[in-house]
Image (cartoon, rainbow, N blue to C red; front, side, top):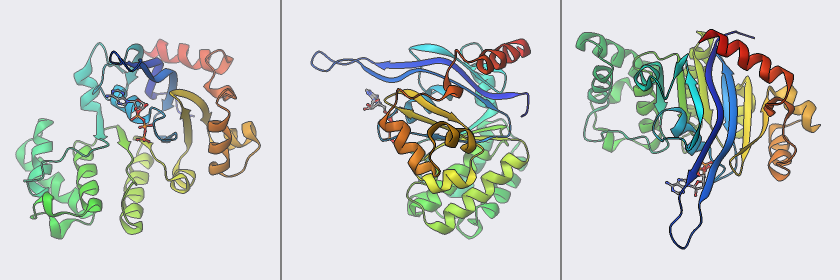
Length: 275
Ligand SMILES: Nc1ncnc2c1ncn2[C@@H]1O[C@H](COP(=O)(O)OP(=O)(O)OP(=O)(O)O)[C@@H](O)[C@H]1O
């Protein structure tokens, strides 16, 4: 296990205030995670479990109701810009400027990270080639298929070579070839030491790729660990069975998700010592 922690949150909570008729919604309820650098980390949960809300908070797009977030060694509440420089984000709704060509969009994204124009252009060409979008670089994004848009957005997230990538549903709505390409690109990034933190409903992909998995249900962490740790916890074999088991009985929280466990306090104090 590597010592440096890429993604750390403690007691992360989000309560959406309801109107007069509807009550408050506790979308994320006291989630604590620590993700070492270089992990391919799957963040799973059924619809409405709180995945997107958590990712929005971890990436500084949404203010938590409470809890502490530290990304790549930077406390989000203290130095949000340092966090934003260290991360690349594929948001749920992509947020592309669709009246730009893919090349224009990527160069623009690079310049947002203060890259010199020549470097942004070089990096844009490199990423378009990696994503097998080289021939489409001069087309308007609005004319792209869903898979092409997703690959463009992913290239945008990677333009500044961030050490941590947060990806909300990168495999949703794309074909098998694009999915394989994205998997290969991300795997390569983790082999080079980057951390990939992604949410997904595609359990086969998660099972194949991820070095660690967190499962949330109704805003709470119900399991966390390597596949072997989750298998030992639930006595199930496949991730699908583990998922169904833990989501159906959320009180059976994983020992590795339990802040009272000795490993947890050890790791947190080691992490805090690094600050
Ligand atoms: N802006 C908002 N205002 C009020 N409630 C919200 C808001 N955004 C999300 N919620 C609620 O918070 C809960 C968690 O939603 P979230 O989108 O984080 O779940 P998710 O796990 O990403 O779901 P999915 O897999 O369906 O995308 C849901 O009950 C949702 O209705």
